[in-house]
Image (cartoon, rainbow, N blue to C red; front, side):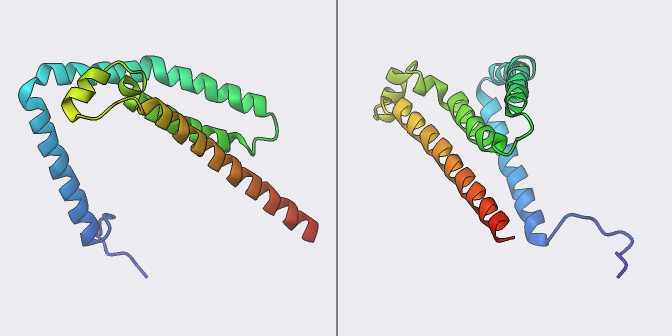
Length: 151
């Protein structure tokens, strides 16, 4: 069957509507965010982009290459270390001021909640991520060895 001549690969009308709503929500959030201190927000955004591109990207690229080289020819487990590490570090990056205890007084005054549990919860979540990844790796290896023994 031939495709129509002017068909756009946009998806269903529901997908287009959801995409338009998400852009509208992002635009509204951007306007509200920039309404107060637009220079500070823009400076923070540019600084975060520069910090990521000039410092963090080279660091985790070197760490990933070292992991792949350490794995040698059997690189089956690399993804099972890469994914939980990336997720754990992303959570650490987002919640670092609370995990590090730097803004506990401000957090407590703004929310009325204690910020003492962020470090323990991040460590627990990191352990769950690595434990789940290890469990998936063991299950995959067991399935592969069973399939090889059947053949």
